[in-house]
Image (cartoon, rainbow, N blue to C red; front, side, top):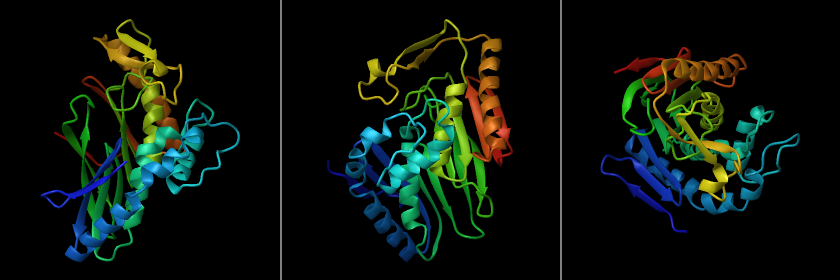
Length: 281
């Protein structure tokens, strides 16, 4: 399958092949930005085909022994999801973040590159040279995907990955969150944790419609597990219960050092776990 690499009018690099759609923002010297684009494109080339050879392993639920994967992205996926193996999870829960992280790592050592972000459909890997900072927009609903706030990340902080999961997104969710955004030390870790917390933001209510994942996508790694396909009007008590269930999981991951902060949203209701540098509006 052919891939495309296009420099957008504003200088960002757009990489696309199959389901992978990446936008890369770069700040630094002209030479650094040019070299970073070359390195990112090289890291992206052939990535989808390489991962496809390992899909049978990556779609299997994690068990007592980690799968022996060869590609760096596949290994990142396994490492990011491994802490959650006591529940149902496959390495695919971290695929978007792991791809973003892989491409970001390829350009991070370019001399003169101040900052970079690799945004793979909302799962973002960050590079910040010493003394630098980045502002990243946050969304409260994946159905509308309009930034409603900012997270400020400084180089001296540990945040290097931001990921968002929710039932209206491009991946299936077993919960009812419109969006769960996680800040973590890597994009793959953020992706896996956002998936887990998003699944936990849940409540049993007639307004929530579900279907087996396999009925929606025969190749889904979730098999016959039920995933959310619609959320109608919910009473405030149900929303509060769902957010509380997700917050309990997020607090546990925070205490274990697996995430740095999380923002959970169902409709107009939100919960924040941790202390991210958030600014709303």
